[in-house]
Image (cartoon, rainbow, N blue to C red; front, side, top):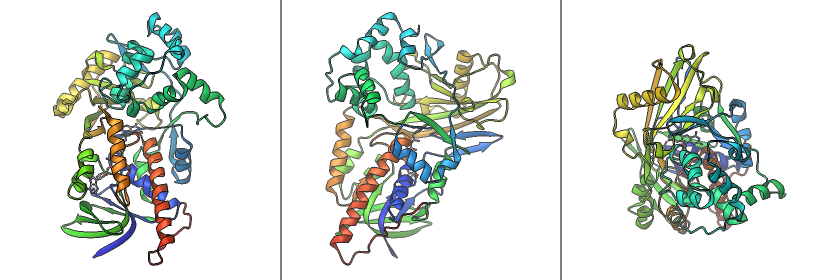
Length: 472
Ligand SMILES: Cc1cc2nc3c(=O)[nH]c(=O)nc-3n(C[C@H](O)[C@H](O)[C@H](O)COP(=O)(O)OP(=O)(O)OC[C@H]3O[C@@H](n4cnc5c(N)ncnc54)[C@H](O)[C@@H]3O)c2cc1C
């Protein structure tokens, strides 16, 4: 049987679910085909023995009003749990954890950085801006702020949080806000001041939050959208363009299904989109196949606080790649968000892998756990064994924004625009974070809406779209 739908989305992770939610706000019904028997993709949460552990994303970092609107109108506001106001975080320098200053003034007075670096920071507004198209993160930061800021501030963020290698990562794609400050205002300092002073430039103050029950609550809530037909357990096998859109073939329980859709959104990893588009859009598939992914493992460990010889009182720490350790960083989740661990217990979520350690996941669980525990013991003084250990492996954790990444993504989008009704909402375009996923989903759903509206005006035979507003 052939089913008809205005919009079909392949992939029920947060990118696909957010796209469907924004479409529903405009009264557009959509269909999501998700191969797994649950929605959420990378995002999931396990609750066991009072510990709440996220499999991938654990926090939303937001400064965008569209995201705020999304959270409040989707019903997620009721579940929102703000990050605790602990600001202490640490970075490893010469085998010792050092507190990271919270702001520019803190950096100027901190002994984390040498006098030379602090002077270089103060002269940042006077440095000429000469960014080349393919400057790497390391080149960009060295040029503007110096090696020490790269090593101790930017490298740990880029290599541990974004999973990229700063020496290979494209500055424009990896640090879009910083590079645009230089491009638009000549320096970071001038850009930050202008954003504070100029009317209409000031964004929201940065906020960080999770949800009660963990990040799974986000994707579960979005899955309840009444204008979205979600088909779990349906793996898409083939797509092909038709005169008025796309034909999509999927399979579930040994049965094949066919869909005809006007608008097709890919919300899968790039290599999956490439394999499906190869027979019909080989040039586009070739570009998508160039996107590589970093392997990442998250190793959660729960400890009884009474046995800790010193209190671990901050948010956690990051490790610069020059320290040459297997561990990339450790978030102390029970300090960051309430109800993540039972009373008097500490939940640490530790990361290994990323673009600087592409072989990290070749090790067995036992080896990863052993090496993580010994790093934690060495750096924090924890002596005891954890009472809870859980490991989440992601062989394709995050896309690597390496090489001429901004050219690659422009080329992908250019080819997609040339293909009737074809869109990509996925974390290899416009940012990996949940905030970026929500913002990109909004932008693509606006395009889909206006195309469908144009079509419904032009054609008298097409099914008109339902324009009633829905608040799921
Ligand atoms: C360890 C880790 C920690 C992170 N921490 C944070 C954080 O704290 N904050 C933050 O903002 N972000 C974080 N992120 C990033 C964020 O979690 C991801 O970028 C985001 O979840 C990706 O969502 P997505 O929907 O684009 O892709 P995915 O979640 O990968 O979803 C793709 C979906 O497509 C489906 N699919 C694939 N092939 C097919 C097919 N043929 N047919 C049908 N369906 C198919 C898959 O089953 C999957 O459900 C983290 C990521 C990782 C790995």
